[in-house]
Length: 240
Image 1 (spheres, rainbow, N blue to C red):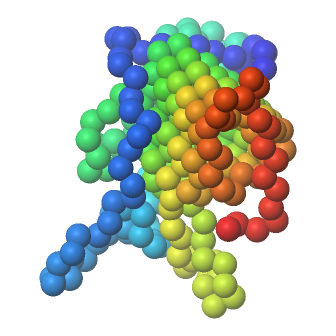
Image 2: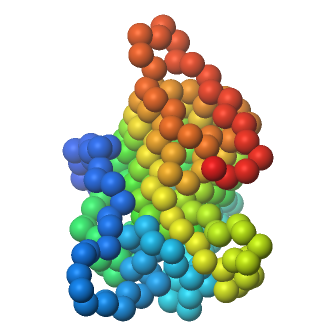
């Protein structure tokens, strides 16, 4: 996945690796009092939310602005230093982090390689471990946590979808549609071939290989006692 747009991102200070085992999606607290949640709070807690709520639209636009600065900076003719490009990428994942209600975190590990263009929705829900490689044209929809484990390689044109909309005929309401997010966990030492699609709620186990062009709809467990990791071709025409 070489090319002039290939870059390395190393944070200014070393960090310990983040834990891959995380709590399940947060559930709404039990209470006899109805608490009016914002659409963003619903989104972050894994509840149904209005995808085109004005606050969420504004945050996606701010994320796109940060993405534009990073993607344009990878043009070698721009003369922008590797350190500045690394800072610009980190700013994508740190955008509005203070407003999410989540604990402070370091979203990018050391020696991470990103090829432009890179696209995401919000940025602040993505965590990338040490020595990860992400190929060009990666798209991540991140209404909730998207975790990419250490030493994972993601090929070109891979899509990681953390949400879906209601698909019954009565719920397809254009910009009034209701969506729901589900966390995606890609554990350590995973290889995802080019043009693959990872659907909401999927966990890909440590050391797994996803064949190019796959649509992953279900859990892929870690290989057990395998000399070579298996290649999974999880093909589906519909979200399960």
